[in-house]
Image (cartoon, rainbow, N blue to C red; front, side):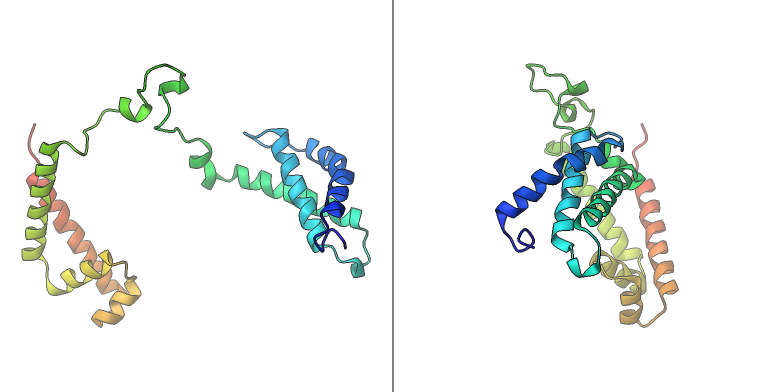
Length: 196
């Protein structure tokens, strides 16, 4: 109760007393792409949660409750680390690093080594500006009122339901209008492509 109420000495005593237990618990698990220290840290977070949430009136010992919290925290960390939704973050390659992670004296980063045009290239700025003007003109002359309004609201971040309510139609009509806009943009872009 002292640790729960913010007594730092009591918190340190509990952590010291249960650190061996947390290490033992963490040693029976494996974290892909992580180290054993990561699981120990997760176990200590579970221990902290046990201190925070323990209620003596529930007729269970603190040790049993702490074991449950530590185990759940470690398992949650493992499940979270193995989810496919985190795969892009877990396997990223920084453009700010030198190619192949080499520690070289050159200042060339992976981003510098990748092929591509510079955004600040004056000729690209002029071409991009002309392309944008051409697209705006095309959309201004070829879109129906409904298509133009739906596109404007879509670009402002409105949902289909909000657009349908504001334009007094159903969401399918909004979807169809935006699909027609998309086709017109694609047709315009194809007509502007320069043959190489």
